[in-house]
Amino acid sequence: MAWPADPGLTLAYNRMGSFDIDLHTRAMHLDPGALEVFDLRPDEYQGDMAVANRVPPEELERLDTLIRPSVKGGKDVYGAYFQIHCRDGSPRWLHTQGHLLRDAEGVAYRVIGVVRDATRELEDAAKRIELVETRRRLTGMVRRVTALLARATTVNDVTDALRDTEALSNLGAVSVMLGIVEKGRVHLVGEGSIGLYVPELRYTRIDGQFPMSEVVRTLRPRYITSREEFRRCFPPLWEHIEHLPVASGAYLPLIAQGRPIGVLGMLYPRHGGFTGEERNLLITLSSSIAQSLQRAMLFEQEHDLAESLQQAMLPHRIPDVPGAEIAVRYRAAKAGRDVGGDWYDVVPLPGDRVGLMIGDVQGHDTDAAAVMGQLRMVLWAYVSEEHSPATAMARASTFLHELDTERFATCTYAEVDLSTGALQIVRAGHLEPMVRCGDGTCVTLTTEGGLPLGIADGAGGRGAVDYPMTRANLVPGETLLIYTDGLVERPGASLDAGLDRLARAVQDGPDDIQELADGLGDMVGERGGGDDMALLLMRWVPRRAAYDGPATTGAP
Image (cartoon, rainbow, N blue to C red; front, side):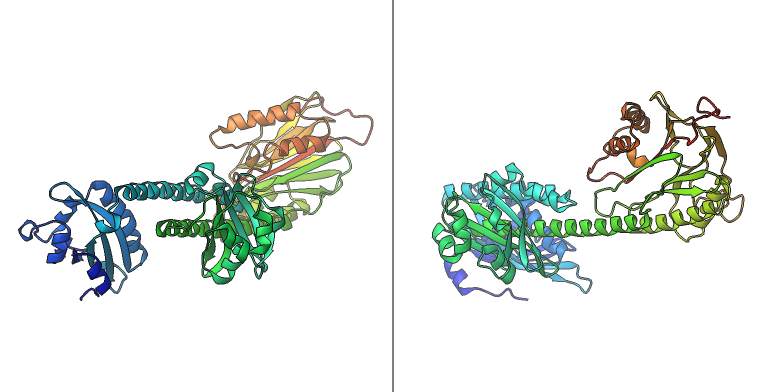
């Protein structure tokens, strides 16, 4: 197969040749012209990759970085400049252009191409140094921003990456803007700059006379090279930026799956155009931003869906229970789909009793939310049928085991007799409750525990598990606290440290139960990532004035 010749190229450069590489055997054929380009005599070349000895290691590494994505990513053509050392040690700049041949499986097995002496293009040493420095600076900028974007899980994370001062300085821009396409408009959601934010342009129409609008319509980059071009082509924008130190700009569409999802805009203080290498790197940068932005938008949509599903399955209101003050708090995780497993419920029962439950389904996604909703209602039903706490927990475990899901759940169920303060507590792999005493001290209520829900012990043949029940007593004014692990677990810290921190917060917190719940919830706050958190507080306030029950919390 012959490589098509370019007559203009042949006239412009004296040395040019072709090559043919077998990627399986690593055999390389160079024609006489290519041997001359590499400054090799025919008797010095044996048809292998020894030509690499002419190429400095750092250039080989750069070539590999440029060409490997084509081989792995399905592209069939690549081109690159690189430098070699001639026989006498002098440098020579070459340009190679290759075409990849692939088998039926899409695997590249052969490369054919041309290589030519490009020294005359880069004969000025100062220009070569400037080119290398520009490449290093811009490539470093793209690498840094790409690394920041790799960790982005929300749109705010993407905008934070664009505000990185080191990236801005390497890019040479004084302002970097990110716009998102929303319902026929471009919504400016983030800008990294030095006082260049223009509030009036937060929303612009896609059919408007703005550069961001234009690139959304055309799906092509727009490079503006002078203040006059800004004034002439985009009058509605010019009236807002005329006073700013801006003389040129680059706007690139952010395209995902063939459709525009946003725009990257950059403003520069310099006049003049953008080199081919700058444009290529900016396009590479915009491609990384588009991928990260699409991922972040998807994560946020999935998170909103999962959170809405969970909120729909949690109780819409907590019933008023005479003799008890109750407070609940819930905080959703803030990373993509990481929401869905935690729940709580309060069940008024006959005989002046109330059931309190809290639990956590394994996993953080919409499936966990769906399982949570089913499990909460099943346990609510068993409790409402007045099964004992141990029986209700065992039946809920059997239900989850037979639900045809690999999920398990932890749970605590406490039943309180509001006429006596008597407690019956069953715990399925969950954290132990705490009690805030009347004097403000906080103690852990030691309780027996069983296996998490949905895990069979083999004894009953159908996932049946026996759950021990712990009995205790509250005294008037004491507050029972049950919660999920999202309240106490922190990355890099032990569970014991988290429990100690919670106990101190309970002890030092305000007396009002709602204010106390607010303070404990603020231990989690609206942080990104992490885990869901559910919290339930119940303070016993007997309705009758006289009380002759136990004087301290503990087993009767």
